[in-house]
Amino acid sequence: MSLRAAARLESLGFTNVYDYEAGKADWFAAGLPREGDAMPVLRAADVARTDDVTCALEDTVGDAAERARAANQDQCIVVNEQRIILGRLRAPALAGDPAAVVEDIMELGPTTSRPDAEAAPILERMQARNVDRILVATSGGRLIGTMWRVDAEERVGDPDDEIACDC
Picture 1 (cartoon, rainbow, N blue to C red):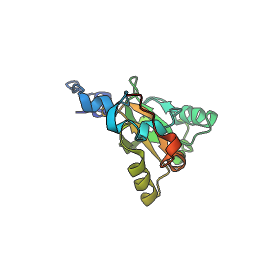
Picture 2: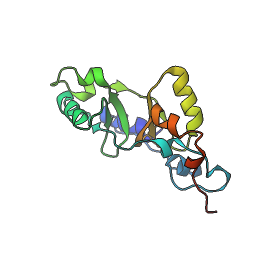
Picture 3: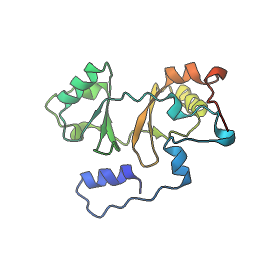
Picture 4: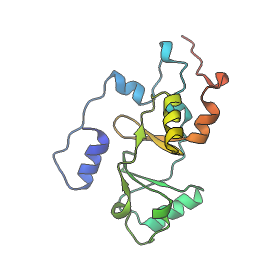
């Protein structure tokens, strides 16, 4: 079970929740240094913005909306203390009842991409589905940032934006 699923189960009161141990694939999925032939490929983590507004399950919508407005953003990512993604509040939810509790109205299971996924195929799917952003998270569900389509469109295919390899 992923950290993301385990964190959500724990928040719901389950006590016997287990985590898995990371391996080599998780090293790359965590956005850690890479080398070899895959080095110069632009990845989701290379494009993702890391300035996401976050909130906790017990926060009020009013508090989350205030933080989002202050950061000029239209969403709040619901995370736990380890930054594991538990849900998301989009603009309509942020405009709702300010006294509502985030956990009661959050969008469950937002779609994520791994940090090591190639940016070009993600961009193609975003364009085909008319999606403006996707959350980027480790294989355990820890928030890395948000890959915005507009940023990916500027950077994918730009030869000056390839990651240099000193290997």
